[in-house]
Image (cartoon, rainbow, N blue to C red; front, side, top):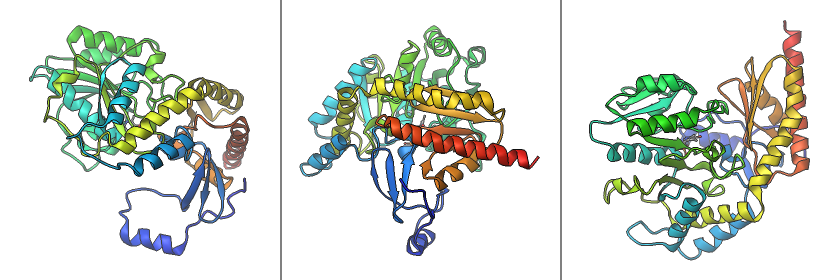
Length: 407
Ligand SMILES: *Cc1c(COP(=O)(O)O)cnc(C)c1O
């Protein structure tokens, strides 16, 4: 693997983006052209080791062979048909998801935000009509559509967008008493990420999810788990909530659901599902044949290669690499790991580490300004783990030295 000699894009590509692409993303000056497993190449021939493949979507690495084959085969047969027809693959996909979760039924759509919209609608449809409020959590992230971004209790995502959708109530993540105090006769649901992703890989305190389940049962509320980032095998179980022995009424999935192909789902218990009556909701591309085949292939690949166990093993290997550093360097405040959801929190701005790792050929992410977030592929090799951690640790040490020299 070569170090990125120069991270730059061609003037022609820069010109296209300047002229024709809305600048709503902060982009690194790198144009990626090819990927394989945990490696990805740019158009200058630089190779990068990817500890954040596809923003968590490429759970099985770049271009996993079973997904590529399923998509290629399906693309030659039938690319898209709408939900006015039956598609065998969609039914099989729903069955596989149901059997690995809480036995519910699936609604398919195309993105995490869309799955959460469906969940919010279903919660309101299922509860009596005066109940419309949804309790969500500070530091959470649920997507960018209006309901999903209103559910996202982070002021920076609401700036200049108001008025937001009425009916959302925010509580501190982990605080059961605060949740209890916010429940009233108009509350319909509680919506939470079992592990907050964008919020900094935050694990729920002991008993928190079980406490939410109890509150929901006590007050007749719908419990929604947003597993868009944590679900589908990333944490070493099919779904993150399975670590905590608590089941939701509704669960949303996207990101890694189809091994890198766009696709999303909302699963609802058999009791709630009929409340999404015919005609009440839809997604034109939802559960299309290509997404369905990719989704099935992703589940099969995880099982055939024991990748849930591998996620746990890799997570522990990351811990062995990174924990000594946490103990040694005062500016690292905490290491949080659940399978291959990894957050390393600093007491200082951690964004410079993204650039310094990029220059050394390692792709990582920083969220909330001070948490290095890694969402590596379940197919990462031991050698890749060693190599990437070596780069990351060197970058952290260098940063510590630079900060010390400046004080
Ligand atoms: C990424 C994410 C979303 C939004 O998914 P999109 O596909 O970008 O709409 C929602 N919830 C969580 C927990 C996420 O991580």
